[in-house]
Amino acid sequence: IDAIRKLELKPESQIWHNRNYLLFMFNNMGMNFYDMAMLKSAQYARRRVKYFRKKTIEEGDFFSVYQNDEAYKIIKYYLREVMCDDDYIFPIIPKGTPAERLYKVNNAKVKTFNKYAKKLAELAGINKKITSYTLRDTWTNIGLDLGIDIRKISSGLGHSSVQVTEK
View 1 (cartoon, rainbow, N blue to C red):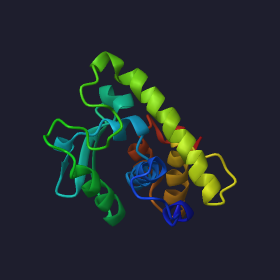
View 2: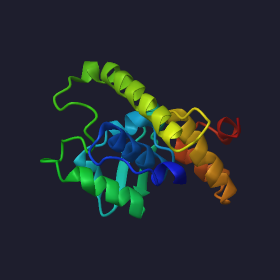
View 3: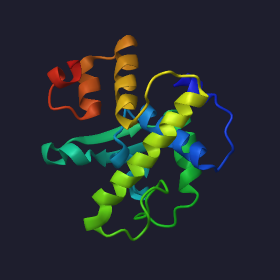
């Protein structure tokens, strides 16, 4: 993560935006790409992002995540383009995308993100495949190494049980 963080990238380039997305997801407990893409302006207040995890919304997985300095800087950058509470924070899902197309649009966007994650890894000299899912695994491993309780990590990832996280 630190090697990717330190890369010198052309501001506003596609790879620069994708690094921002990668770092934002990492700093938000390994947030799922779709959940990040679907964040709207109204879900951010007082340095907190509040959302229901799409995959486990039926279980009531509500998150309120304090934004550390890096995530705060990223979110503030993208909020300058937001005009109303219903606008997406990140320019991933085009405004006005019909609900029935969101899943298909997201699949295309996550493929693009994973392509850029691979390129970021190459530029950073990382010899491992990086995707939106391996990013979640990285957050999990770092969290465990830092002594974060596995129950908190499991909850942050939206897992149904600690056993899923342990796998």
